Amino acid sequence: MSYTYLSLNDSHSSAGCLTSDGTEDAAAMNNVVEQLENRLSVSDFMKMQEKFMSSGLNRTMVMTREEFTEQMSAVIRPSTKEEFGELFDKIDVIQDGFIDWDKVTSFMLLDLNEKDERTKSLVIPQWKNLRLLSSTHKDVIQHVTFLKGSSCYLTVSRNGLLGIWGENLKLQRTLQITTEAVKLKDLWVTTLVSLPNVNKIAVAFTSKEVCFYDLNSEQGLSLQYRLHGLLGTVICMDYWYNPHDGNEAILTLGDVSGQASMV
Image 1 (cartoon, rainbow, N blue to C red):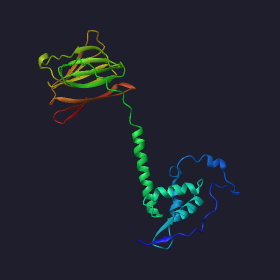
Image 2: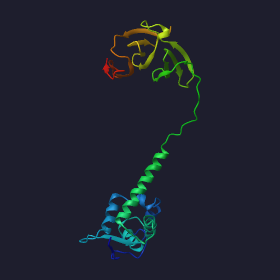
Image 3: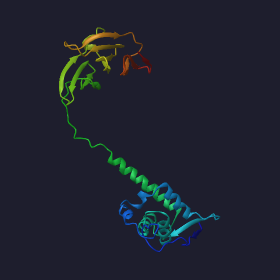
Image 4: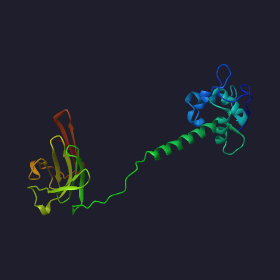
């Protein structure tokens, strides 16, 4: 690769940020607290690129440290020769005494990537220490959901035991889910979804049915109605409703055969 060195046609003898009358703008310099590479704008990079471009030559222009500090501090304001000198030293990692535009862009891309990684590390949530809860469930927990209206959590296990937990994760009570289709010993719950606008829950079973229970009942769970005769066992459910129109709601069912249906 051939190189052509730039001459110092646009150099300035004094460092610092100058006003139109040639005096140093102390107020502006007092605001220069960030590192130079953090303050450079797109417009600044375009000015820097112009300095590296050689009109009419298909050669890569290079600059020494002195040329770089003189040329760039003259077109980038506010800045100082010292700041561009520090930037040159960061770019010239192999210390060969000169840099070109490719080295500048490579350094900036690497610097931006490192800053992005640091930012990501700072936004990682600081989790509290894990707290083990004694579970009332003796079988596999199939689903956990939160009821906003009641400010409580619901857990349901495979054998149909429903746990109601407060926001402090203390168990408030347990209820046994039953269905007329199968005996209790044969009961197998697959999933659960809450219907918050009507204060009900829908529970799916391997008996290819979905039962809807009322949570307002003082006696416990009150079976309201059943959806039975399904072609496949429902294994996942989702519920949406219009908060402005209680009559507009959709219950989506997904079964073991990969079929999805809406009610």
